Image (cartoon, rainbow, N blue to C red; front, side, top):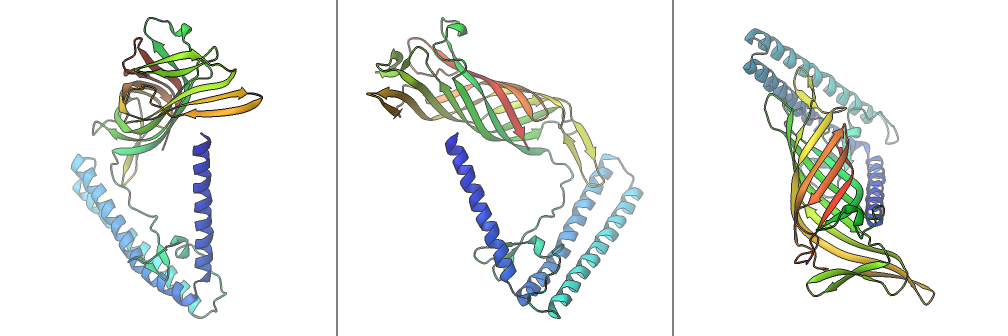
Length: 359
């Protein structure tokens, strides 16, 4: 977890430096270069508004094909859309022309508002067709697709972890209930199954699952040939933890109500503030297994990391499900594949915790 936090901090720092560098670069560009950028932007404004009009016409045609509107209504809507986009082009180009005129008759230190021009410009290393003098035009406005059947979510889950051991009750587990935990991070896509209904969604993606097991009674894991067993540690253990990291590809069918949001040029189904149930499973690969030990030896603190296979299963698969409201879910997963392969006594990993699907 500390490693993930460290990487996130480095990423934020890097982006901050780039942003500051971009601001300095834009401020140092002279009026002549800015004017060239604005002239190029005029052409892109016209193309952008034409693309919006094209998307609006396609949306009107879809409504016509579905029988929601008549041919006469469709023609009226198309004319209104064309008129709106023509006026948008006229007004936006007038803004650009006025700012070009301001720059031409003022010195380099004269500052203007960046509503339609430099607010849409970013720093670019190297040249390309959409850049000038090291400045790249970024396009934030894009026409919305009439029917977007697939969306994506960032997935984060964590909670308690343990093992179901053949012939034993969960209460008799040799692993600590509070100390054994799991963590999952990944990305998931969600596609509406039926064209006219959003009651069922097909959810799929990839995740990194990290399952931890902490033995009780001062024990630790020892690999003895093709068997992995628990043995008592010769010193007083402060911590013993086996961590198994898997790359898996979850697949779920998600059920639940949703709210339909209808606009003139698009519609969407929203599951915000709705109950959801997801049922499915996952399959993937074990990518890392290691044991961490902390103890004192001759009065000195010792931290030991053992990176071995510990006979853990290479191919992992299991069942999972969740019950959610909005973005928060109660999440359960169970490995059908055993933790350790070729064991005399079979052990299967089980996890329960919270899951967050954030779009």
